[in-house]
Amino acid sequence: MVSATNKLKAVTVILRASQAIQEVIKKDAATYGLNQTEFAVLELLYHKGDQPIQSIGKKILISSGSITYVVDKLEHKNFAIRKACPTDRRVTFAAITSDGKAFMDRIFPQHEAKINEIFEHLADKDINDMIKLLKRVGHHAETV
Image 1 (tube, one colour):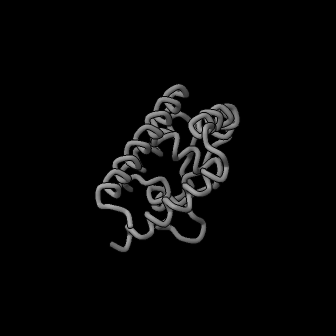
Image 2: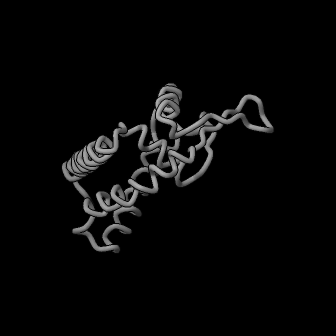
Image 3: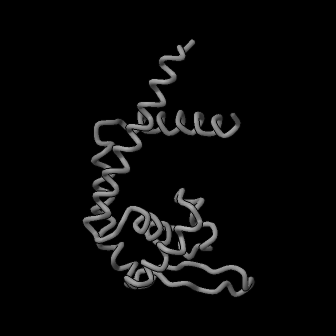
């Protein structure tokens, strides 16, 4: 059985690791002239295509109120546009522009290399085990 002290230590380690990873991503995004949230939205649109603006926040873990501001900034940079949903007037999509796609085509390999650098000291099995364990903890935490 794991002691309460080890469980508290696990929480601290998870949070510190998360902060360290977020800091790397924040610095990496800044080198491309984006903040971390802009990069996350652009990456989502790049990989998953058009997204309802209302659902973006849940997918990248930011408040829905911030999404409008971020999409505005991406539109100003000509990286994203808003598109009306053809079947539901209440829904507006965010879509990546051709400039946004070209930008991501150019920078994403560098970003991916930075992420690979974070995990370079772990074997694939270690990463897969970590993913499974963190998912179990996260799913259980949702029920507590």
